[in-house]
Length: 143
Figure 1 (cartoon, one colour):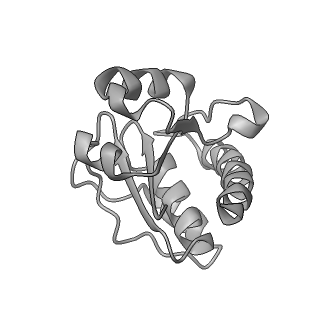
Figure 2 (cartoon, one colour):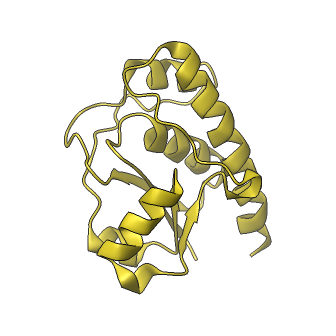
Protein backbone atom coordinates (compact mmCIF):
# COMPACT_ATOMS: atom_id res chain seq x y z
CA UNK A 1 0.00 0.00 0.00
CA UNK A 2 1.28 3.42 -0.90
CA UNK A 3 -1.43 5.59 -2.48
CA UNK A 4 -4.21 7.56 -0.80
CA UNK A 5 -6.94 9.63 -2.44
CA UNK A 6 -8.98 12.27 -0.63
CA UNK A 7 -12.26 13.38 -2.21
CA UNK A 8 -14.71 16.18 -1.48
CA UNK A 9 -17.00 18.19 -3.75
CA UNK A 10 -15.03 21.08 -5.28
CA UNK A 11 -11.49 20.02 -4.32
CA UNK A 12 -10.60 23.49 -3.05
CA UNK A 13 -11.34 23.36 0.70
CA UNK A 14 -11.58 20.09 2.62
CA UNK A 15 -9.71 17.61 0.44
CA UNK A 16 -6.66 19.86 -0.15
CA UNK A 17 -6.40 20.44 3.61
CA UNK A 18 -6.66 16.70 4.27
CA UNK A 19 -4.17 15.97 1.49
CA UNK A 20 -1.68 18.39 3.03
CA UNK A 21 -2.02 16.87 6.49
CA UNK A 22 -1.81 13.27 5.29
CA UNK A 23 1.17 13.94 3.01
CA UNK A 24 3.06 15.61 5.88
CA UNK A 25 2.41 12.68 8.22
CA UNK A 26 2.94 9.91 5.65
CA UNK A 27 5.89 11.12 3.54
CA UNK A 28 6.46 7.71 1.95
CA UNK A 29 2.92 7.70 0.57
CA UNK A 30 1.52 9.32 -2.54
CA UNK A 31 -1.46 11.42 -1.46
CA UNK A 32 -3.80 12.91 -4.06
CA UNK A 33 -7.06 14.80 -3.83
CA UNK A 34 -9.93 15.37 -6.21
CA UNK A 35 -13.55 16.49 -6.31
CA UNK A 36 -16.82 14.95 -7.34
CA UNK A 37 -17.77 18.31 -8.87
CA UNK A 38 -14.30 19.83 -8.96
CA UNK A 39 -13.68 23.45 -9.79
CA UNK A 40 -11.02 22.16 -12.19
CA UNK A 41 -7.85 24.22 -12.16
CA UNK A 42 -8.91 26.42 -9.23
CA UNK A 43 -6.43 26.93 -6.39
CA UNK A 44 -7.19 25.93 -2.84
CA UNK A 45 -9.36 28.44 -1.00
CA UNK A 46 -7.35 31.29 0.53
CA UNK A 47 -8.57 30.46 4.03
CA UNK A 48 -7.56 26.79 3.64
CA UNK A 49 -4.13 27.88 2.41
CA UNK A 50 -3.67 30.22 5.35
CA UNK A 51 -4.82 27.68 7.96
CA UNK A 52 -2.33 25.12 6.68
CA UNK A 53 0.41 27.76 6.47
CA UNK A 54 -0.15 28.30 10.21
CA UNK A 55 0.94 24.67 10.59
CA UNK A 56 3.95 25.05 8.34
CA UNK A 57 2.29 23.29 5.38
CA UNK A 58 2.19 24.79 1.90
CA UNK A 59 -0.76 23.98 -0.37
CA UNK A 60 -0.48 27.11 -2.54
CA UNK A 61 0.42 25.00 -5.58
CA UNK A 62 -2.77 22.93 -5.34
CA UNK A 63 -5.09 22.97 -8.34
CA UNK A 64 -8.48 21.29 -8.26
CA UNK A 65 -9.01 18.15 -10.30
CA UNK A 66 -12.01 16.00 -11.11
CA UNK A 67 -12.05 12.53 -9.59
CA UNK A 68 -11.62 9.75 -12.14
CA UNK A 69 -12.04 6.00 -12.19
CA UNK A 70 -8.27 5.61 -12.62
CA UNK A 71 -7.53 7.72 -9.53
CA UNK A 72 -9.94 5.60 -7.50
CA UNK A 73 -8.64 2.31 -8.85
CA UNK A 74 -5.02 3.29 -8.23
CA UNK A 75 -5.67 4.33 -4.62
CA UNK A 76 -5.25 1.80 -1.84
CA UNK A 77 -7.69 3.82 0.27
CA UNK A 78 -10.11 6.59 -0.68
CA UNK A 79 -11.25 9.08 1.95
CA UNK A 80 -14.44 11.10 1.58
CA UNK A 81 -16.04 13.75 3.76
CA UNK A 82 -19.57 12.34 4.01
CA UNK A 83 -21.73 9.26 3.72
CA UNK A 84 -23.32 10.77 0.62
CA UNK A 85 -19.94 11.18 -1.09
CA UNK A 86 -19.14 7.56 -0.29
CA UNK A 87 -22.45 6.48 -1.81
CA UNK A 88 -21.79 8.60 -4.92
CA UNK A 89 -18.25 7.30 -5.46
CA UNK A 90 -19.20 3.67 -4.93
CA UNK A 91 -22.12 4.17 -7.33
CA UNK A 92 -19.83 5.61 -9.99
CA UNK A 93 -17.05 3.06 -9.45
CA UNK A 94 -18.43 -0.12 -7.82
CA UNK A 95 -15.03 -1.81 -8.06
CA UNK A 96 -13.75 0.41 -5.21
CA UNK A 97 -16.33 -0.75 -2.67
CA UNK A 98 -14.51 -1.72 0.50
CA UNK A 99 -11.76 0.89 -0.02
CA UNK A 100 -13.83 4.05 0.52
CA UNK A 101 -14.00 5.49 4.03
CA UNK A 102 -15.22 8.68 5.63
CA UNK A 103 -12.27 10.65 6.93
CA UNK A 104 -14.03 11.23 10.26
CA UNK A 105 -15.37 7.67 10.48
CA UNK A 106 -13.75 7.23 13.90
CA UNK A 107 -16.14 9.82 15.34
CA UNK A 108 -19.06 8.82 13.07
CA UNK A 109 -19.19 12.33 11.60
CA UNK A 110 -19.52 13.93 8.22
CA UNK A 111 -17.20 16.90 7.69
CA UNK A 112 -19.30 19.92 6.65
CA UNK A 113 -18.27 21.94 3.62
CA UNK A 114 -16.91 25.37 4.61
CA UNK A 115 -17.02 26.70 1.02
CA UNK A 116 -18.02 30.41 0.94
CA UNK A 117 -18.41 30.47 4.71
CA UNK A 118 -16.51 32.43 7.36
CA UNK A 119 -13.15 31.32 8.70
CA UNK A 120 -14.83 29.72 11.73
CA UNK A 121 -16.44 27.13 9.43
CA UNK A 122 -13.01 26.33 7.95
CA UNK A 123 -11.53 25.98 11.43
CA UNK A 124 -14.36 23.63 12.44
CA UNK A 125 -13.87 21.52 9.30
CA UNK A 126 -10.10 21.47 9.82
CA UNK A 127 -10.55 20.29 13.40
CA UNK A 128 -12.54 17.28 12.16
CA UNK A 129 -10.07 16.70 9.32
CA UNK A 130 -7.22 16.83 11.83
CA UNK A 131 -8.87 14.27 14.10
CA UNK A 132 -9.72 12.04 11.15
CA UNK A 133 -6.25 12.13 9.64
CA UNK A 134 -4.64 11.45 13.03
CA UNK A 135 -6.82 8.38 13.52
CA UNK A 136 -6.19 7.03 10.01
CA UNK A 137 -2.45 7.74 10.12
CA UNK A 138 -2.15 5.59 13.24
CA UNK A 139 -3.95 2.74 11.48
CA UNK A 140 -1.99 3.10 8.25
CA UNK A 141 1.35 3.10 10.05
CA UNK A 142 0.44 -0.24 11.63
CA UNK A 143 -0.07 -1.84 8.20
